[in-house]
Image (cartoon, one colour):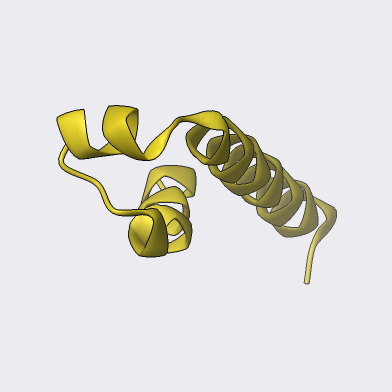
Length: 51
């Protein structure tokens, strides 16, 4: 694996963690308003981290 690929994976992981952290801070009501349930947070964060 090249350094560029490793850097890309680290960047994706950081985006994933930031998304999880941000969504986890929302109340259940706020998540509901967005059409999200708490159980979906990790799945949504994984999708948002990839490009």
